[in-house]
Amino acid sequence: MGEVLGTGFGVMRRHLALLGPVAVLLAALSSAAMLGILAGTGSLTDFAEGSWVDDMLSGTRTTLPGGMYLAAGASTVISVISAIMLSGLAAACAGVDAMGRHTVRGALAERLAGRGPALLLTSVLVGIAVSIGLVLLVVPGVLIFLTWSAAAPAVAMERSGPGAALQRSAALTRGHRSRILGATVLILLIAFGIQTVVSAVVLSAAGSLSPIGSVVLAEVVTALVSAVTMSWIGAVIALLYVDIRVRTENLGPALRAFAAADHSRRTAGPALGQA
Image 1 (cartoon, rainbow, N blue to C red):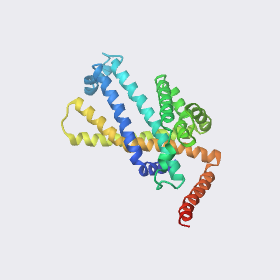
Image 2 (image 1 turned 45 degrees about the horizontal axis):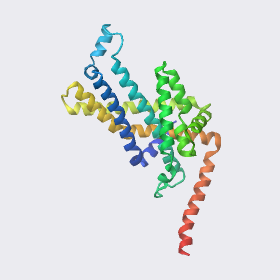
Image 3 (image 1 turned 120 degrees about the horizontal axis):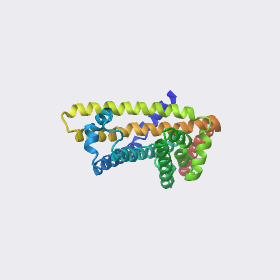
Image 4 (image 1 turned 120 degrees about the vertical axis):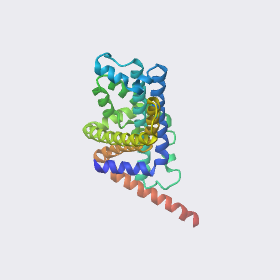
């Protein structure tokens, strides 16, 4: 598990120029959706001031304002879609690294060529399904995620379509879902801890702010920190896919053989040209 987390950090660090901006954009979209729905339904002030907590504790309110449910739902859907999409991008990055081609210009673009629509559609399908499952007593959503967590990496690495990728993920993850669950819970806790600490430090340094101002600033900080945390989460999910294939499909020797052949082809090209 430690090796997967450490290697995931390495993939994130080497490819932060790609993963970071995508993670920030998606996190900003999630925050904007949440704040926009709260503001549009008139629930933003209650949410920011925390009055709904006091009402729930005192028994004067038994349910949350509808706007909060909508905001939480929209934010969750976008966040899950983001994690799945980043795992697909990170899988392509890991594939380039495994080939020893991370220094080859255009290698990553070559691997991702034409994969955008399939990756987006797969991420949306998994994100919506997981989010609906989470609403249905949480457990169904967790099970759906564990079953389809390898779908986006399959799109990027195997050039599968959305339907084939979902079927491939269900087959690959069978027998490995407890490991996926453990790694995912661990990385989410670490990422949440990092985001909480950084937000607390920034809010403390910002001084006196209105409740709404504090909420907005916290969301901005979270979006920026997501460049690292969400990219790392995506990389870990991608590497779990690679790890499963190494364990069950002898992927390691195949990668080494392909990398050696690719290196020979690329080094032979300039030599032939000079001859």
